[in-house]
Image (tube, rainbow, N blue to C red; front, side):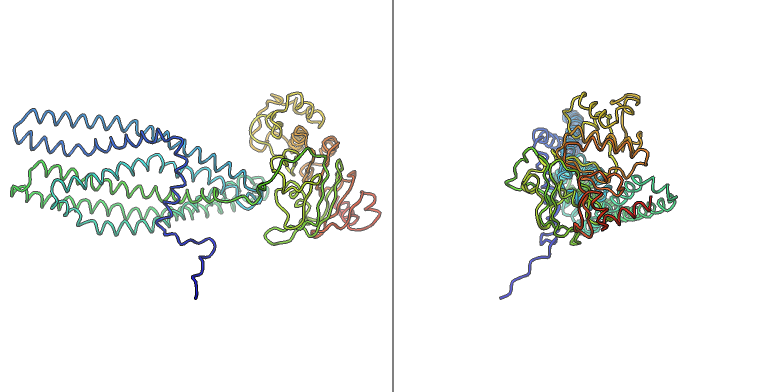
Length: 593
């Protein structure tokens, strides 16, 4: 007996029409904190709808029971009621619009905050795989696409949906024969709407993908502007952006063409419906089978029948764009972190600083980088990792910080497997200084406190003095309160790196990781950096990754990595005397110097 094979991974047997409902249900929890205001908004929508539906009925009363009957009181009351309904609908519309915007803005603020918080939970590997511009797109243009749906689209859906239902009921109540005539045009309208729905869904998803490509290209280009200008590639880069932008234009234009074919067709069907009702309704009036007031009301409601259909069709544009955006956002929120605290994870006790790799193997996307590495680093030691590019030096450091987990083996800190302790407690006891000191927008003081927000001004100034950064900081216009812009462009590379060292010192880590921390500074600045490093590494375990070998000759131990294996370790002098791999690297480095 055979059984049906399960759907391939990533596919679902869920019906296509169920997917939007499933996505929208994901938004419901974000409305719960604002349930009271949401309820009032819906009630105001009912008032707006009722006020709009009252107009043609009051016109019918004014004509049949007022004008034709010669009853001025009825006519006056009908006119007063007509004006009153208009004013009531106007006031209700004002408050409903305000509340809908208030709730929508806060719902999307919460969604943006949660998406960003979730991105911060995702492991380093996710961010290395995902272009920054694409992540920015999730938090900006995709959220903005949802804003129109949540603030205006929901209002349009409720009011126009209720209006459509109300008009249909009223038309049948007035005259079922004329009402049925209206529905003659529904089959072509239904066919056209079904076609529009299928085609536009695909086109709007493509448009969201293309706009993300544009943002990713912009971010990548602007982040690398020095490289672009340095190689004189402005024209080529502009051409590349123009190509990506053109793909977005074509995708967007395709949606415009589809909308341009559909909406005029709805208007044409609306005109045909009005002509049909006008002709047959007039015949019934002449035959005394219908009053003039009912005829006028019928034509008024007929406009209220097609206007909601057109508005809801236009809303479908907004809906498809929002669904495509929501799909992207949910894709982020539903991405589970590959690195999470174990269920029984415990806080890492205060570290002495012993580091041990036990038979560690690791690879990126099944490409082996480290194989069966065994390495011990005693507390307080400075150990330098050297080797050719791609040998696995930085990967070892990332495993210590638990940016990745080993495929096999264990990484131990003071005997604690890093996978068994909470990530927060682990990261609280180590500092990583990358190749280029990254500074954030804000004051210099804020940047220095980044790793330890409760640091006092005295501790900040003491750390800056110890690192040798206090002199240039004091020379700045506002000292520690100097505003730093994106990436610290006001400071030189050496100054930014000194600030990074001071920031790491203020954090008081038990374990320090320096990843090519001197490679971006000149030789004159390097001497100053080395003095700062000596102070920073004092009395703590330090793992130093360097291509510039002059910076690690005083390390307690130098570990040579080749092809993912530890091939040598010892002091600078011991390894030179051995004449092995390190001696070759050092000779090559001297030759390049």
